[in-house]
Length: 210
Image (cartoon, rainbow, N blue to C red; front, side):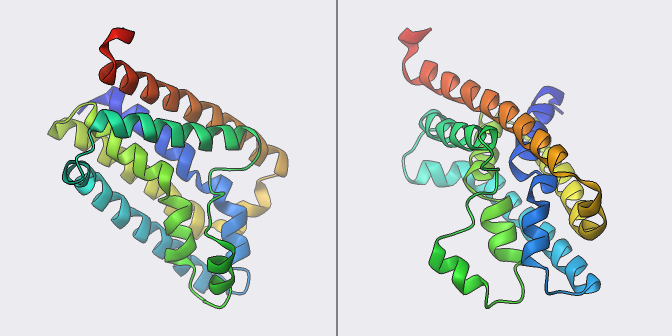
């Protein structure tokens, strides 16, 4: 297994899907549920996130090929998306700012189960997660590369499931200051990974830049 790729994938996915940063939103969306229902919602959200992540990891590159988009082209575009998310986290917007249009949010308030929408998609598995899962194995298109990225995704999903399962208890322990520090730190890490993606894509598309 590619340990370096695993570490990079884990850092990127944890920064984007950071369950601690998403915790306030989860508690808000499940505020009308009892403890047992809230825990089931958290586990379902983690399961849906895992299923979406695996599908994207396995089918991402073939889909790009179907549309005639190279991995390097997508790396540039995806790096820009990740950079925007990272900068948003540094500015306090958070990694889960995309929760749908106002109309979609209004519709959601009438639905009792937010586990798939908006928790799993697009909060956890949104543009940043999709970009990361498609691009990172592309830098090492081998079984070892996919294994490393898949294990990193699994590790983050396990943390997500544990945090959401004990959301009510953890929410009382995380101060606003700690949440802010975590958001800024994850934003900086994500921005650095995004810059690396953009640079790698540009040097591949424009070899003269080397």
